[in-house]
Amino acid sequence: MTSEMRNLKVFASYRGTNYHGYQRQANAVTVQEVLEKAVSKVLNQPAGIIGCSRTDTGVHAKQFCFNVKTESSIRTVGFCRGVNGELPDDISILSCEDVPLDFHARYDCKGKEYLYRIHCSESKDPFSTDLAYHYRRKFNIEPVKKAASYLTGTHDFASFCADCSGVSTTVRTIYSLEIENNGDSVIILVKGDGFLYNMIRIIAGTLIDVSEGRINPDDMPSILDAKNRLRAGRTAVAHGLYLNRVFY
Amino acid sequence: MTSEMRNLKVFASYRGTNYHGYQRQANAVTVQEVLEKAVSKVLNQPAGIIGCSRTDTGVHAKQFCFNVKTESSIRTVGFCRGVNGELPDDISILSCEDVPLDFHARYDCKGKEYLYRIHCSESKDPFSTDLAYHYRRKFNIEPVKKAASYLTGTHDFASFCADCSGVSTTVRTIYSLEIENNGDSVIILVKGDGFLYNMIRIIAGTLIDVSEGRINPDDMPSILDAKNRLRAGRTAVAHGLYLNRVFY
Image 1 (cartoon, each protein chain N blue to C red):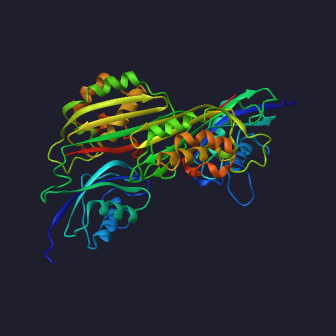
Image 2 (cartoon, each protein chain N blue to C red; image 1 turned 60 degrees about the vertical axis):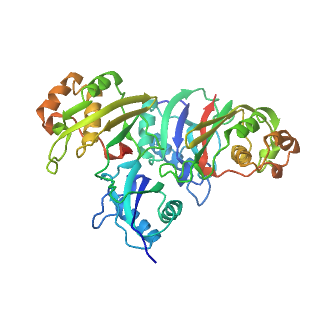
Image 3 (tube, each protein chain N blue to C red; image 1 turned 90 degrees about the vertical axis):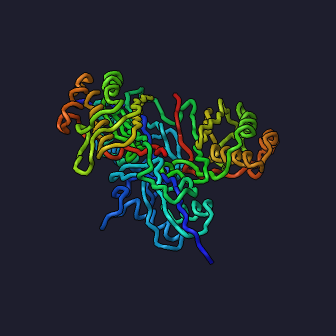
């Protein structure tokens, strides 16, 4: 029996609450570890998966992509059902397809969309305790929209990076940055070619500081120019953040 | 010091997953018990609360109303903050106001709106595991809308009641029954003057049977006429059900 190498491109979704982030590490349960265990069981071989991104502890993914190479002849539908059968309730496989062997979930990613969710109300929402930042004040949408407008486009985002030591450049392009306000719910939706460490959480925290009047929206250009993390606002809590979509 | 009796009308919200329903019972944790404990602590007296409704194990409430009588002079804002401080993450106080002493959360309720949430997809949604019924097939919206149209208005709903022994009449009025379909999500929204035991879950289950072709939408009048629980469809699972609004 000859077996041919295949490359599976898999979309998944997870609720990050119970995990120490995506990436495998010693002495802590991560999404990667749980996915690899389930995938290995279904493929009947030790399988290493390549994820599109790392996410921090408590961060969620509505759409996450990974690829895995295998000589298994399992059908893609059977792979989805089989892996879902091995996974806990908070991780789900959405789809699976065969792709060329040179596809790489991280290097081939053309862009990502992140979503930051805020529940604005004096009272907490029992349905989103670990799924949205509970903000007890009024959200002032107009200055926040103005501040956000300065961030779209190509900029050096060094002021919005928690640790830039591992990257060759801090220049990134934000394609769109939308603020949606629907009753108690505020959604910050950011689409770009790539993001620095904690960049979305620092953007969300800075916009919250703008809402509170701690930062003037027209100061955004000088904050970008400073290339200094101390000039931007707070880092918003992890559990409001979602990797929403990944583009190839 | 003279203290005057007051009656507080309180709106709350809860995620029912961790509770054996609303109503207090021995040997099981219920929403009523947890609320009464928190309210008693803040009012500094043993407090019995009167709820607008009972909900089953696993059923949620986006808006629930109760009233409580007290001689405490606490301000209503302080009551909300104080009780929220004593409550776990899955129960929240939304508002509190003084009302006349004869107000009764259950007897004065003029109508209720329930919501039944279905996640329609082969893959589970990690964000709604305990918050929506996971239905792995396609939802056929048109026959379901037709079947639903037969249920609005005033009818004898004995066929949609799990246990009618405690009620004097099984006639109820449904003001509206809407089906909303948005991507993977189906919402059944039912507004009426009152509901029989398990009535919404049997309506939801029957509509799912219609979607699957097990029940013909035009059979709904004869199912109502039969006044026989065995003629209607399945009882949909509890964790898709929400008490959405209560009207006074």
